[in-house]
Image 1 (cartoon, helix red, strand yellow):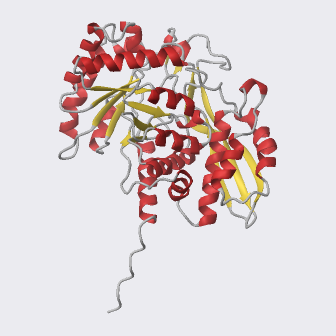
Image 2 (image 1 turned 180 degrees about the vertical axis):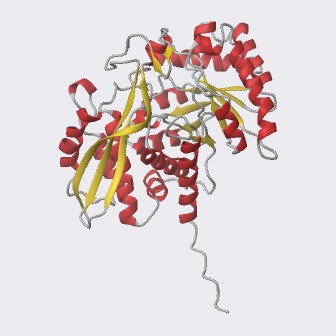
Image 3 (image 1 turned 30 degrees about the vertical axis):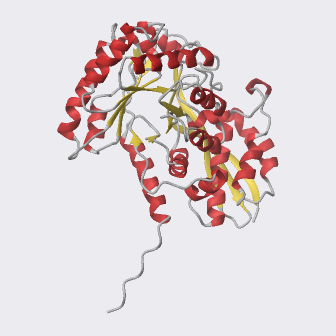
Length: 422
């Protein structure tokens, strides 16, 4: 068996590209769009339709494996690769990528993925192919290996990483978008383990003194027992996009800051609380210093709020740097930003044996294909939690990721015996 052909088809993603810097600098909502001019290179508007690039690998027996190249909603921010344009990279996939893959044995996922990871990119992309390209092609390679070997993608990934897969679904983290109350209530009714993201990406949403976030967390803690199943015990996880740092500023271990986090912990009541991206300090080194400072301050003050690394934690090397510095209780492994999907698995594994847990995340701006592939990575590595994606409607992404994990786990069990004849 060998890889015969490689095709690339421009497609749509599950959400939009947003210029995060422009939004933080005051771009305002105009209905679903934003007013103002973009400031991040590559953007023509503050909000643009998301794009994806479907990759198809046709094998010598006619089987077709697929993966989707896609990039995060806030492309070009926090040290990430520039805005992804599907038309631009179609020729790359059908050119240098195809030349590398044609004739290869599709069952050899590890070597094939490593070969793509090593391919040089265009000069404007630095030394490697755009992360979105490596992401999508590696998904197709994982799918191809699973089809040829007659295994689940979970088993192929676990074999490549040397892991023992989880035996139960990984806790799913739902994201609400701006409809943060209605979508949170949907999550509660469905018993989602981690909720609701919240999208607090401006001072207006957070509150001039952080009061809006505190009130929202208190509402979540009150509403969850009312709507959730019996004994519902979710983890509350809020992404603040660095806005707490804008409200309070450094140093982050001082009493004013830790007292605010203590008030958030009190608002969460009996539920564990995780705050993602508390500040954005403009570089990896500065972000690690600030996160570690905050984490130490919270520990010294006896505040039981976990902090999650997101901004400036993009590549495998970034994940390693945050973990080694003890700068976070969780690191988000932001799957499209790591390039090949195997790199996400390696990043989750790097957290093993440390006091930092791995959250296999990603973005609302992915596709069903990439979300399903990531569900297998979550199972293969037994991640602490994984993101419901794509889209911002919640229900669809939760369905995609949850059902894919359940299918994979069922397939990995021994087939039930046929009932005996009467």
